Structures are given as C-alpha cells and as structure tokens.
Length: 265
Image 1 (tube, rainbow, N blue to C red):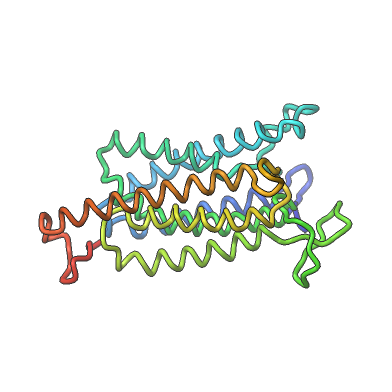
Image 2: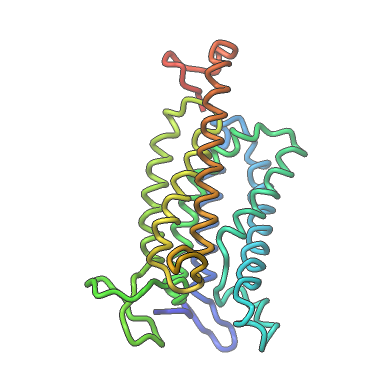
C-alpha cells in the first residue's frame, strides 16, 4: 500500500486525498463538456458541482465518524484529518444530492436534465476515488484464498480488494451510462438507472467488505446493505414514474424528440 504519495519535509500528499481530487476533477470536467447538450450552462453546472462536492465531503465525513466514533473518541481532532481516509459514501451522496436539489430549484434548472448529465460523472469520479481507498488500506474486504487477494499492513491474511472491485464495477457503470446517454427515452432515465445499478453494485460488494462496515442483521447484512437496497428501490420507483410520465407526454413536445421518440440530449 502507499498511503503517502509524496512527502517533502513537513508537507505530505496523501494518496487517498489525491485520488479523490482526481476523481472529482474528472467527474466535473466531463460534466462541463456535456452540459450544453442538456441545455445547462457550464457556469451553473460548475457552481452546483462545487457546492455539492463540499457538502458531500462534510456529509461523508460526518456519517463515517458517527458510525465509527470509537476510532476518534481518544483523539477528537483526528475527525478533521479527512485526507487520512474515512468517508461514508452514502452519507456524502445524500447531503450532496440535497445541496444540489436546493441549488437547482433556486436557479430553475431542469432537474432531470441535470441528473442525467451528472449520472455518468458520478460513476467515473467514484471509480477513481476508490483507488485512493485501496492505497490507504481502508474499506478492505473479508479474508480470501483467491489468487488476487491482497495482504494489507497489519493483517496476517489476504483479503478481498473490495476497493478495486468498486473501481472496476463503477468504470463498467460509467461505460453503460455513457452508451445509454445518446439512447435515453425520457428525462431522468440515466439518473434513475444510476441509482439502480449503483445500489446493486454496492449491495453485492458489501458481502465482501470488512473494513468500515459492521453486521446488523442475521450476521450477514450490514448498514451498507440496507442503504443500498433503499437506493435501488428509490431508483426503481423514480424510473417507473418518469417513464410513465414520458409516455403521457410523448406527443406534447415533438421538437425535443428524434424519429424514434427518444429525447435529444
């Protein structure tokens, strides 16, 4: 593992923080490039991205600390050392979404257009950021005898590299959503699809995780399982509602659709 990427005197660049920055930068860069296709001004997309990311960092750290307080009780100031690792993705995602919705409403931006713009970027940014988790040695998996098992410092056995599973599965999700973008049938389809597929990925990966998670039900299911299932259900419900609404409006906005009835991004 390489938790410290570069160290020059008293200045240390942590791999965890660096990879999160790279992931966020790539996600925002992609969104800004595609924003005009969705009728969204790049300046608006950048502002919403900035404040949503800031809120996501706060929410992710707060949720992680609250669910792992024993790690910080002896040194409360360590809560501020975010660059050393320790984030709850769902906690950050929830607060980031709430912040984005608030800003979207204030600026009267089409919410599902922005959601579809953001969906592939979310998958891409998350995939890159999880490489930082691997380098930091957090969010590791349960013991395994498989040949690709990884032995992290402080462990006497190899474990599943669940961080890299997350990277691989979300890169696949990014590819699926990018392919889907030019073929979407209604506004919000990509975002709803992201919730379903991302929740499904996390539900499966949670069975292999050991670090930063704990069993809640039957010795098998975790907090992550419950939240992942909730995300899947929200995504499925949203998909059904938006698809039904689009069918009712299919002839109302002919200039916004191509010859096959698909929405032009």
